[in-house]
Image 1 (cartoon, rainbow, N blue to C red):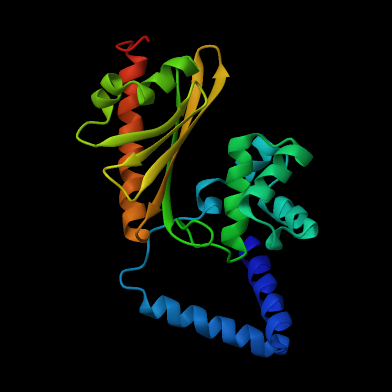
Image 2 (image 1 turned 135 degrees about the vertical axis):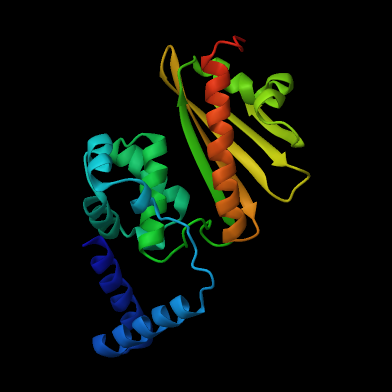
Length: 233
């Protein structure tokens, strides 16, 4: 249902831009999609936000599923807004928690053709990863900010810290650049916290896929290290 609505939206957008009839605009978009599929070698394994987060889970955590959020965003005119404006609107107007506001925003941008899976809106690609760890948020933050602790789960990588605001955020250049990481920390309760990593300025979808798998592995290692109680500061 969501894919069908998204395609109809793209057809109408093309009609408004080109003056074509619905049938012509639809045929042109289908032809372009077929050409893109035929040219893909190999096909990209990148998944959209809707692949990663089910409609049922989104409704459970935010009160609405994908179709309902897309309808609200369309009515608000989100297709002409920036990423930051969309996320801020979800937080302030609908009280959506920050991480879920970002999830909805990226899902909307992908569905409306504003960015490809794994791509930042406008340019470049990114990889993301997140974990909930059974330690206080200060301990989770220190696992990134403290170089000695960081080396225990993130070895053999040159990380040049740009900013570190305890216990909320950590930004750093990665392996001498040009890519970098932006990390956010959210307390779940006094003994549990969530970390979300966004690896930015990647060269292409293949690098984004590789680093997505890398962060999945490294955050699992971090979780194991911290929950074993080997790091307490």
